[in-house]
Image 1: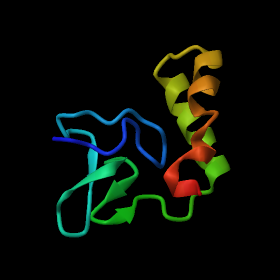
Image 2: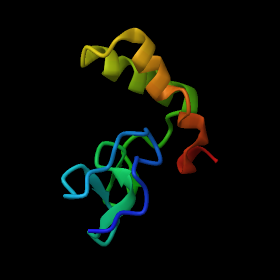
Image 3: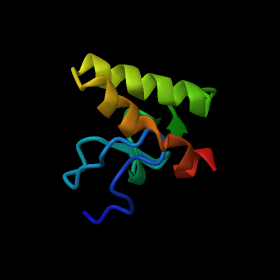
Amino acid sequence: MDIKYKNCQSCGMPLTRDGKALGTDADGKISEIYCGYCYKNGEFTLPNITVSEMKDRVNSKLLEMHFPKILAKFFSRNIHKLKRWK
C-alpha cells in the first residue's frame, strides 16, 4: 500500500503501511490521509472538534501513554498545520 502522507492529517498520528490504523472513505476504501480514530466511513469521528481541542486531545492521549510532558507538547505543536485544519 502506498499511502499519501506519513501522518494523519487530522491528529498527526503516524500512519502505518499495513493499513491497520487507517481510516475509511464512504465507499469503504482505505483513506490515504486520515487514521481510523479520526475518520470512518467518509466522516470525521469528531466533526465539531476545534484545532485547539484536537491539540489538547492528542497531548492528553500521549500523556496517558506515559510520554514525557515535553514530548507530548512537541508532537502536538504542529497539528494546526495539518490538511484538515487549513
